Length: 334
Image 1 (cartoon, one colour):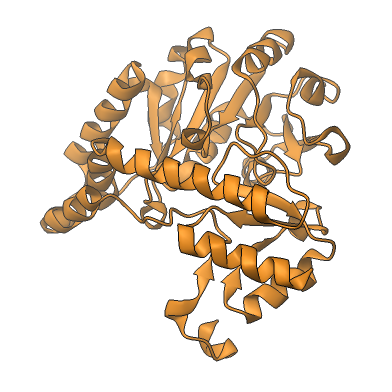
Image 2: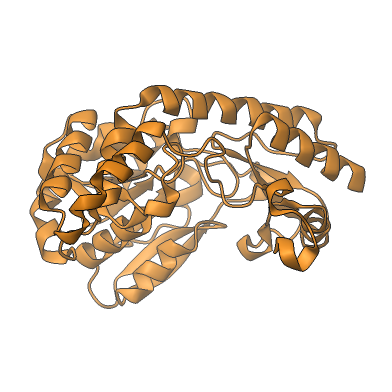
C-alpha cells in the first residue's frame, strides 16, 4: 500500500485492525526465539502447559479450556460441537461476521438481533430477547465490535436464564481486558454459558493466531471430538505462556488504550460513542471517502460500511503519536 501511495511505510499509522500498538511482550518474543528448536515435533507438552496456565488464570479445570487457532478457531470448535444441520444461531447486527460464517460452515442457519444506533448501540436483555426465538447458540460480544459497547454480566446471566435450556450463550470477550467490570467467565459453571478469549489484542500476539474458549464442565469432553490434533502450534503456545506471565505489559497496553480512546473522544470534531474496547466508533458522514482520504495521507482506519454503518469509521487506539496524528488529519477533513 505504501508503494502504491508513494509513501514511506515507516511513516504510516495503522489504526484499522485493533492490533496492539505496543507489540507483544518482550518475554513472548524471547519465548518464540528459544522455542524454535522445538518446531520439528508436535506441540504435545506446550499444548498441555498453556492449557494448564490458562485454567489456573481462570480457576477452571484444564478440560474446560479449548485452545484454538485464534478466537475464530475456538468459535469453530463450539459450532462443531453444538450445531446439528438446520439449527439456528442468533448473532448481532452489526457485529463480527465470523459468527455467522462459522455457523454456516457447520450447516447452521443464521438470524440476527439489532444493535441499534437509535438506542446508542445499547447492549442489554431487551436487545437480545426481543429477537430470540429458541436458537441453539446466541452470540454476545462484550465489548462489542465495532461499537465498543458491552453487556453487564448481570444481563448476560438474565439472558442465559430466560433462554431455553438447550441454548448455549457464547460471550466473545476478545476485547475484555480493556473494559472495567466482571468477566462472564464467572457464569460458565451455570452450564449454558461459554466465553471466548484471545491473545491477539491485549497480549499482542495476533500474528500467532492463538485464542481459546472457556466452556461449562458438561462440555469439557467434547473438545477431543471436535478439535484438530494440536490445535495451536508450539511457538504460539510458548509465546502465550510468556505473555500470561507478563501482566505488566498488559497493564501498559490497557493504560495506553484507555488514554487513546479518551483523547479520541475529547479531541475529535465528530460524534463518537463511549467505548470499553481498544477502538472508538466515529460518525464522519461518508465513511468510504473519509477512510480513503486518510489512507492517502498515510493513516489507515476501518471503514464500517461492511458493518452496515456507511457513515462511520472505527479507529484503533494507538500510541500517543499515532492517536494525535489521526485526530489532526481527521479534524482537517471536516
